[in-house]
Length: 370
Image (tube, rainbow, N blue to C red; front, side, top):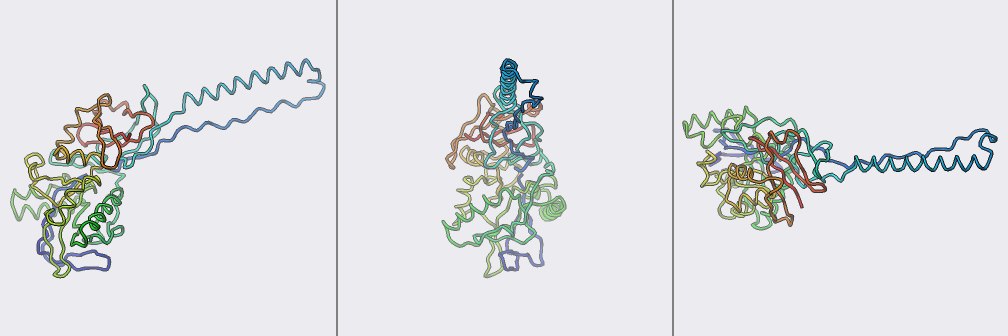
């Protein structure tokens, strides 16, 4: 979307509401958090010790009877204790721990061949869902949108209080832009767009087609096919407080720091200049998508757009995962599970942190933290 020469009025917290005039047009959006439940190991049930029967003194009066009774009680207690240990052995397991940024956490796992199986997840949820002309966005009932205005820092501004974003990426966004501020000093950076619903996307699409004809589809996605529906995409622009005018964000000058370092925080420039023939979207240096670590760093290192990365992961399996050491000091394993194979569950190595995301096409991407 372009915001060139559009006027904004400031508010007290760094929000900017556009004054009358043509609405800004924004582009394609990206897509994560998914049904999550923390897996906990089964706790051993408390065992109440049996109390000996307190009968009439004459009934258990003889020493022989007492010795026989003692042996019987000891034998029964031993069997009971062994049964408890066996119960714990059968049903207790050291399940995987919660990942740093899990796309989907699972319900109670089932041990199978040394792996943990995660049931009931969808390929339409997660940080790595692909949304484009061929892969429409599927609504996520667990989407957790918050007003970015309520969480923003002084290192950047937001358009207004109505701009919302997926909550789980707010801290990473703030960390990235705070580090940018420390490195480059004050700036005129403004976040102009993030989550969009179908109504908003439809209006933007109609406006762009009216202005540019069919070429407008290379700038704004059809409603239902926009990454902005995910809450994981955002658009930057430049707002000049002294003049009230704005300009396109092009990722140059001091802002090149963001484009060169965003992958360390899990973000990528979603529509690179040399990938328009694959993404079907023109180069948008202002449009960022959250995919998480290590995926953002791998994409940048390999020169992949999201379509290419999703395709490349299909060659990696639990037996032959992609292994990557990221800038956060952690080593990750990444592999793909086809949707039909995953119907019986997804294998996760025991005792490992993990994240599972659907790709919104044909399967699941599993990320294991060493």
